[in-house]
Length: 251
Image 1 (tube, rainbow, N blue to C red):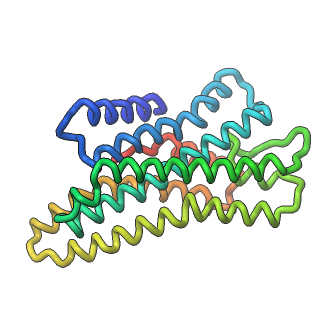
Image 2: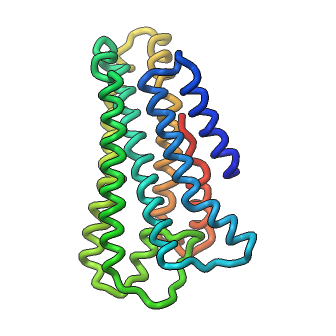
Image 3: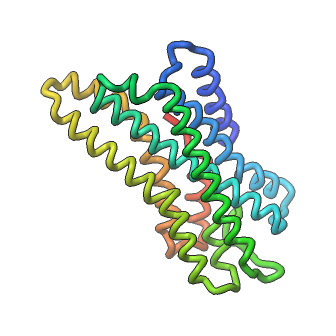
């Protein structure tokens, strides 16, 4: 499953870069999202496969921090890129006459750079907070990788400041991107409903249907993991999270 995910994303990147007809903002963002998906999946699954093969479940503190950092980085980048792609579809459907002007190559590159910078800042903020925490010498995490929320729950320090930082990180990497996606699609749906012909509605919806499916898949499985607090230490949550990290394909 992991190899299928990586190979699928690599094929998408190869197709976009090799075909001049795909050199458009939509497919440019798609190739960047594929690259981020490879990083997001590779953060946790290879380590889990090695642990399964070697029958070892131990990880050093530096290894745990590194894994958590990349998980936060690529997870936040995935979320922001999905928001950028939703904005691209919003401009294409609601303001088609201004699409080429508003989504020129320079602006598309700037949107990707801003997404990367925000992801790095969120990752660095989380790292700075974790490095100040106090842990026991040996702790057990009820996951197949160093989940940030589980890691913070094992700290011996005062959780108040840590909770504030985590709420901020969650807002930057989750709440604000989801709000941007919802806003874009609310305007898209309103614009599609104003089209009189059924053929025109279907043509407009078909340009964003695949992206909408990926948004539901990405956020749906993610929310399924972190909202199921009642079973957070059970095998079911581990299976949810494994499915979420392996199945994060782009449009």
